[in-house]
Length: 395
Picture 1 (tube, rainbow, N blue to C red):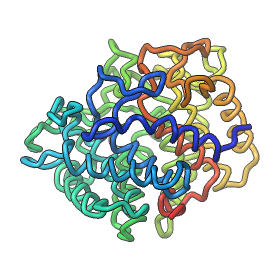
Picture 2: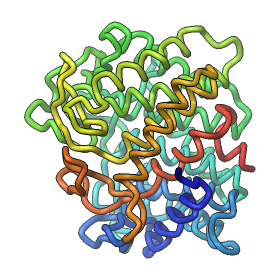
Picture 3: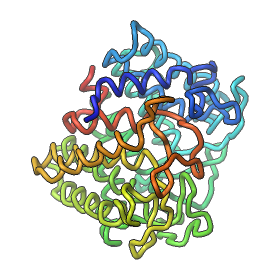
Picture 4: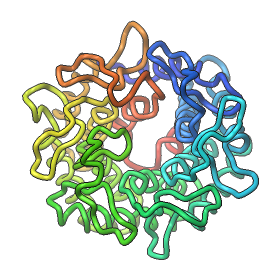
């Protein structure tokens, strides 16, 4: 059985060296060393800022180290990663702070909102200004007239690719839940609910809960998208069971956050979890979740990614908290046993980010151990109340 407090301390300790650049947090290799082959990514910097804000609130590192690391992240997000000229945040910069990828991505911007929200809850200097700015950018540029997420834009924030995605929408829901709790403005919860209602109660439900991940600008599903790149780390072909699990949990947070929540939130949360387990868990005869499946439910990419099991653990815990049904706690224990057996790296630290179909360490989709966001917060989410968000509860 995993001791979540000890494991969170271990994960936070592993991630400390990622703050080696004033531009933000580095991608880490297998040994927990900054990887010079990677730029400084906004999404990693924001996720690690969020984690260190939580670590500060929990006292996971000695003295004020976690507070200092969270402050480092806020400074980077207000500094090198921010586009002072045109607004918003670059996708990535060099270790010296020079832009590497000037694309403006909803995925990364959602994590800026999450990082700023956690920073505000943790009392990190200047986090409140960052949150105000990030929410304004999201509202003006990354939500369309229907309140749906615009996936990516060019540097000028005026043009973008003809693509919409469920992944960036999902993390926008996560970010808006946090923003609503931290600011006390329930409109962010309502915006999150509208995104979830469209993609889950509308699109996913009409596809038997095999949620399409990729869409045109009119939100028509593109079911063959990336069929020639089935193992893409962000836009894989087919259904992604891990995202079904992540959405399942987010629906339960919404259920606990909005007044008079619609009954479909819990109904769809159950259905998403059931479908993810049905098509993803040990679907190829080996223990663990496959990464993706085709539209008939058969495995496509059989690699096991750590974030999928982390989200399974959190979703099972959330369903048990909401329903009290023992079956979900049994699933939580099963997933936790898998983490302990296969994912935790007792020698080099953190969790293996990828395993092959036989549960051996692999590096086909992900190399190294980029960040600890999924692992760290899953251990907490599986055991804590569904609302408010972690940073507010811990604060």
